[in-house]
Image (cartoon, rainbow, N blue to C red; front, side, top):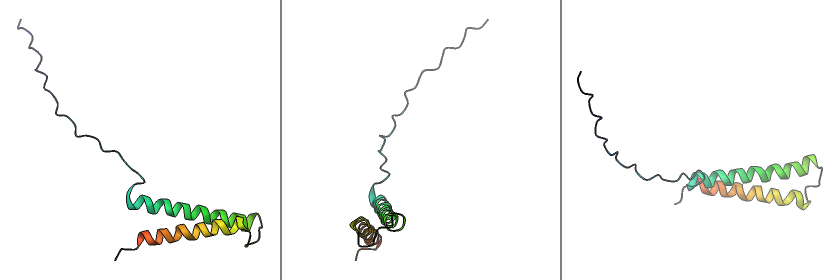
Length: 84
């Protein structure tokens, strides 16, 4: 009988490159996304108070979220336009 073959020499693996953290809401796209979500939520809150709760349009529980929706919508517009 022949002698068993010795196991191959274990080679050292090359080290991996360091992992970079993922920032899902980082950068310009994340900022626009957050502003858009806030604008939609504020607009939905104003619409709910005005249409479902039947509050007058001059009530602060309608006006404040409407102003917030306008503000965040303006921020989305500003973020999407190119800088000159």
